[in-house]
Length: 356
Image 1: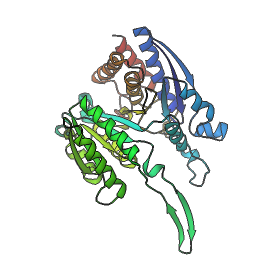
Image 2: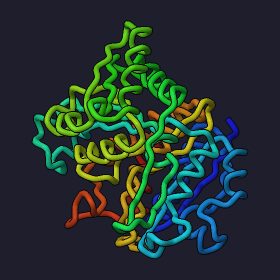
Image 3: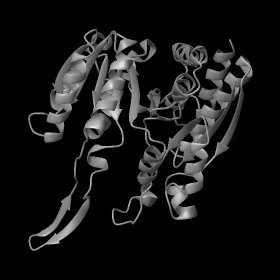
Image 4: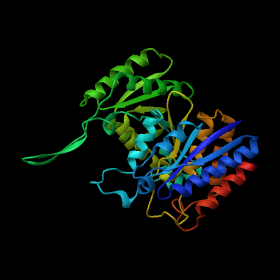
């Protein structure tokens, strides 16, 4: 198979982990007889410094002409001025909108070899295998107006949460499709007791559920869902929710693995083109030290192989190589501060097991 993949290294530890993801893709291509080509483009703070924009047109066009996009991370204290005209995170919003990516998938499972790394009791982690499906292009992050105003009483800030029927239907329907290939349970998360957008969300989720009687649908308020995630996480299969809630809940779910460094994500639209990235941030405090955990990026590569390239056997091989590496006790510093390997050593260890 031939595929052209755009790599967006970004800021902080992004270039370090993205490079390990690229090397795993190269290994997959060699082992399975594929032809993958790569192109690096700019995003985030480094793009602001170079072009004055967090995601320039050339980068967007390159992504549109690729089969898949692998992203490192964006942001850092250098660009954190709240008064700045543009911020690195706007690059993420633009790539998602520009590629029409409305569904963010974040699988969460408890690795047996990492049970002791989680602050949750081992018995609560037994059987955890859930999938967060987060709406990605609507809600509070994109609503307008979004501004500050000066009033006689002082500054006033406004954010607007907007959802349309089309936006809600397509993400909830995607969740039902994904649940059909899993344990056939969808938990729709909202705040319908307070928010009008959530009342519309619940209404449409109920209608879609009625058309899919083979899938069990349950509704849950976001605050009680947050509590249930740490008290009974194995009771979830597919969780579908809006942008802000999904952003928060998926980071909370990362506690099950003991570190943000191991969780992958896929952002998908209506076609096969997708954006793949670890859910962790740019971690500027450790950037350049070679101690970042590349597992989240490498597992994102597995999702890239599965969803954009249709190479499920290759995806499974990468996931098994990660499992074996962790089972063998190989750890980065976030998992073991006393006995750890460097970022590139972890990537190399995974590639070695992939070859086996």
